[in-house]
Amino acid sequence: MKRNRGLGGLLNALSRRQFMGGAAAFGVSIAAMPKFASAAEEKKLNFYNWDTYIGETTLDDFKAATGIEVKMDLFADNSELFAKLRAGNPGYDVIVPSGDWIPRMVAADMLMPLDHSKIPNMSNLFPRFLDASFDKGRKYSLPYMWGTIGIGYRKSKVKEVPDSWKYLFDSDEYANKIAVLSDCGTMISCALKYLGYSANSVDKAENEAAIALITKQKGIIKSFADDNGQDLLASGEVDLTMEYNGDIAQLMTEDPDIGFVLPKEGGIIWQDTLAIPTGAPHVENAHAFINYIYEPEVNQKITDYIQYATPDKAGYDLMPEEYRTNEAIFPPEAALEASESTDYLGEEVTQMREELCTKMKAA
Image 1 (cartoon, helix red, strand yellow):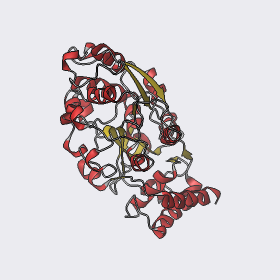
Image 2 (cartoon, helix red, strand yellow):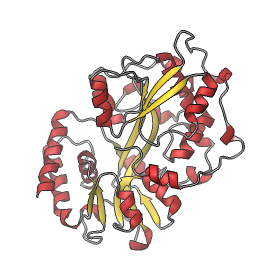
Image 3 (tube, one colour):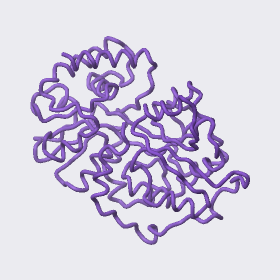
């Protein structure tokens, strides 16, 4: 998954919303920072992040508050992050892997346990994020942003809200006006949800049924999109697209004819995390930075800029009502309850799914 997912161009073209009160000029004082920062550790931090996935002034504000200078490098997807660290940590202190990559990174000894006592602002998180199926007890990771994968659509082109995966996988009503994410695991997981199976099914017959559904529909799918379904929707090339809610929510700020729905069968819940890689040269600074991210006003500025769902209740509470009530960002609870986080299912299942997708694309 790309974290800019088209957001870079969209965001740069938009004028930013101004913050309420004095939030835009906010800076955390050194007195507000945890007292565990080590005087012996140099005032540096190396951050490895997705593109356009931090507030405009967050890094400068952190330096002003702590004296710690942040150097940020960018990666395009989790595979690139994994490959970079597999050869040994080249010096990164904080990274932002997606949740389903945490187990394989732990298995490869790429992550060090977090010291929760050094992250007191964890208390600002929504309780539901204090544990995770991919990281029990949040030993190695803490939440950064989260969201869903559902259906983006053009309101003027649909007869009714397309609140089911059937519109993508089991209907010709929108023939040649459909885009589906090309990522194999995501595509199969969504088809599995439509069929009434778990998105994390490891059963070969169930996975084969999902790919058969997609293969049958292949002839009327306009695009298997490499994370640019929102662009196809914006241009009118498609009327329905499987996409990340953040992309569609951002598009909705530009075009009131765009909507987003989490299908009634359930969609996919994703979560990006903050973690400290094994061999990090500035461990104390890393904990201080993660703690800083959860400061209410800091988190609000990040959230307002990137427009994803924050797991930080204190930051959420400072956001405007239009954000807190936006169902593209925070879908109805019933749809969320039907949805699932995708887990790492092991190399054997991953290989099986990849082979099924290869056959589908060649059919």
